[in-house]
Length: 280
Image (cartoon, rainbow, N blue to C red; front, side):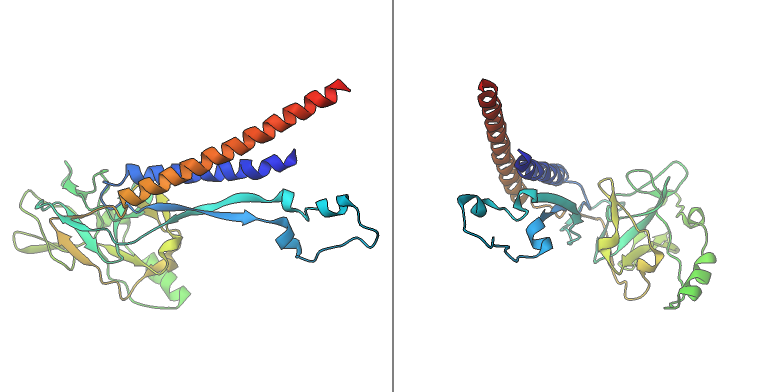
């Protein structure tokens, strides 16, 4: 009954798929949310060992045709969750504290666990006068760094970068204005530039929660050609298509139920086999 692990692995994979899609649906109205997709791999032992068929050099019998060539060791493996960074629709709110990005950039924020990146621009000013995200994490100001492709020069430059806590944007109670370049103004004076960061490979970003991302390699930061337009009074909607995700959820749930029936069938066969053997 080792063949039962094939449908079991499929059921586990579909359960992971259902959980991923359900999370997408739950965040369909979360500003700046980027949907995930579970990636699966079918592991086939026969393909890994080659496809040469070893025919017996003798008079054939029915048993010779029952050889599986490792097919009974096949299973479905969950490789990873892939995040779709497609641009979400910009929706006007007329709230000057709502800031949306059009392009591939991310806001740089300071969380208790270090620097994180987000597309969610629903901002506010906390009791200390800091410009913060909805989670209370300070938005960081941009710093201009020299462009270099030399790893040693880049390391030396990064050592001179101010501490993140020194790049927190502090405001007063006067109205806030942010232009398309991310320049922050109050009372006609420029306060800071929003730090909007673009990455060479967004696939290397790791999602933390529903709106934050971690970049583990400083070399993944793109230091030129990072043009991303900033829109004040707008929010970027989730890139989840609720109708499409609900359809995918129903499909994944039905596949999961089908695999459950296969597992029950295997269990029934095993039970009957045990009862028959017990009669002898």
